[in-house]
Length: 457
Image 1 (cartoon, one colour):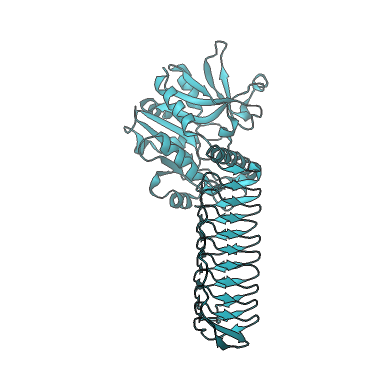
Image 2 (cartoon, rainbow, N blue to C red):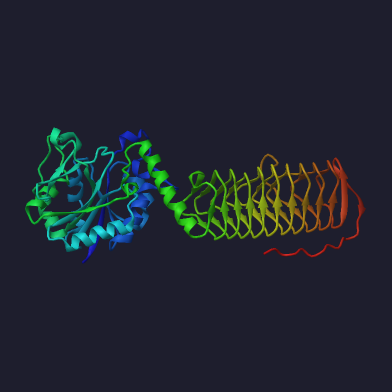
């Protein structure tokens, strides 16, 4: 059996009350359309086909080369949307699996089961149903006295006798391809002038029968039409993500207050404390401790790192580095192994050498530090002169006294020291003490021998 997938994603999403197209609203860090595409890729052969309409350009850009596209310029119903894909799909597959892009939480295994049901069913189609506690706006499945499916009735068209029906149509179908294209030609317009895919269920009932596969997990069939639905889907997807990581050996003190993007990776033995966010392509090593109240955004952490109540953006931490509380690593920060950055410190576009310490209340920007540098409280690299950013270099083993201003461009030599409150405007040679405002070199100090650092782990 050759199976192709078709995703209906042309809706305007007016109930979202947003300038952003509905399919571009993010779920756990990814646009909704990408979740639907990933599921389709895992189930069907070839590229999925996306029927787009409102916000088509944005959806195309997000999907990139992962899909083929068909445009539905005017929204004349779901059957009209599927019909527009005929030119791409007719003669290319034995079965066509169709689902809605705004129901992005389908698990691939569920849709595979639907495809298998469609293959073995006698009739021309199989579709997913559920037994709903809250029927929302789902169409209801109608059966005759023998249990045979005779059609689907939309919420607005229910008769009083049908109000009690609880089996709902979940909007995912697997069609026999040769039957589908012929049957679509027979679908007539509704009183509103729209063509509904659900009409095919009644046709199939008269031509060999429609098969139904019941899905028990209601979280899979969350449809997104409003901001409230989006939040509901986000929470369900987050539970799914967190459960997967806990099963892989990641500890979470409070999963409900832990936010992990779909693109994040976490090593075994890492513990995540409440209100911690791992955003974008963030990679965390083994045996780390993250949080509470921490944001890691598109960053990489080695093993045994500690980040408490801090924000780390587009940065890298090697093994055994630690930050916080209340630290901020901005874009381009790189902390080598064993670096400690304490409370209310900020680093931007700088590399701190192995074993360096930056205790508190300091800013390091556009700087390169050697190994075992000590940065005293209140130290600032004055990297911006009003026109351009300038670099600061600090040699290995240097000691920067509290409240030192390093006016870039400037170089502090290996083993050099600055006195508290110094304003350094000129380079300081190796093993030299500089004090004052502006700082002046007052004596040459002998190079100090440092004990080798013990590696952790």
